[in-house]
Image: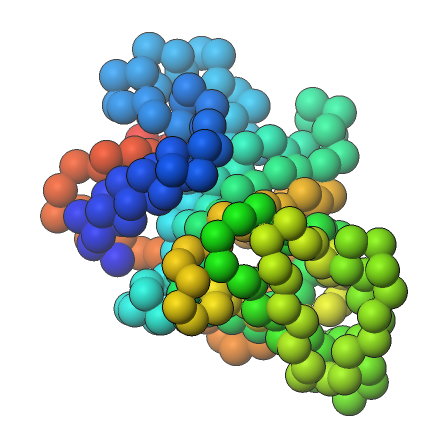
Length: 223
């Protein structure tokens, strides 16, 4: 992805979050000088991977297959005493996060406003293929059974609990605008706890055509 494209995506996400009155931590708007000025006090932000995360999953087409994420809080191995994580995400209409599961992480994914959020679900087999067994899920504490490859639609205010080993892909419904999407989960490790059904890239390779508007989590090495 070009840095100019990433900058444009973040600016758009900031406007959307402001319209939805979702207020971000002050460091989410820091520039380079702020990061450098505070570099001795941001160990938790850097090591726990808090911050902006923009990905096109290696597709080269962010609008079709991509996601805006901002990790707001997170534990890390033997650090901070936090067994939980929280993210806010922006999911566009028909913009897919591809089929994947987590080996360790259990998560609630929440439609916090906007359009409907569509999920396709499969259990995984012992060899990490798609199971043909029905998937048992919880939608806001209500048990539901979904056939393999079946769909669940979350309206604003609804949430889905996704257990480890459950393949899921999701996208925003057509015609109702972006979805403000929350995630509350166990400790998050996007570098080691994502099993995508296809071989794809989780983090983008960036072409530095302009300076960063906001640092991504993968930019913290620049500080």
